[in-house]
Length: 79
View 1 (cartoon, rainbow, N blue to C red):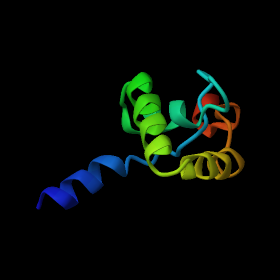
View 2: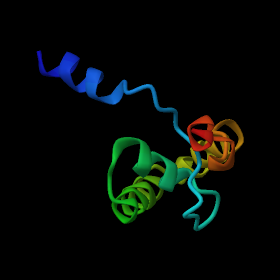
View 3: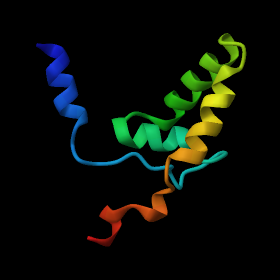
């Protein structure tokens, strides 16, 4: 059951937030923090995916920028 094991690893009661380590809006940095990945790798994969999908990644990034809250509003920071 590797799928259920990977789902339980991702479900750690932490939300996804836009990172303060920003190049544009912190979306890739937030994804990297959530999955505990290297932020440079996430940015490179995003850039490659955007170029190879006729720049549809730009629309996805803009939606994530609007929907994902910024890290300043992280309720875990107050603990």
